[in-house]
Length: 116
Image (tube, rainbow, N blue to C red; front, side, top):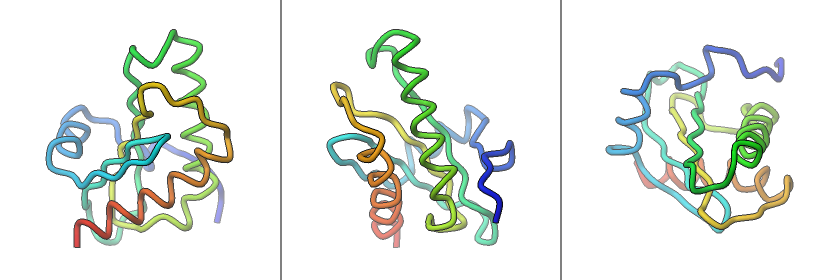
């Protein structure tokens, strides 16, 4: 398996973000909030990132995006397939790379478990 994060693995449409945020299952820890919603059962996991402006300036927001995308890219094979995930950082979190990396698969499993 190639460790890429291509266009087919991204949630891109505003309608998909809105649907996941309103009707999806939510899981959170001290670092991230993750929303999950079922997509087609045979599809790979897809991810979208939303970083509110209250998180910080553009440099801080872009760093969050890079860390979250990289974590997803490296761990996509352990995430449940057939789901779309939307990830948002907690307001005052200052996590390390290791905390983000541990958080995403744990929260994905938790959100999927709540759905079933």
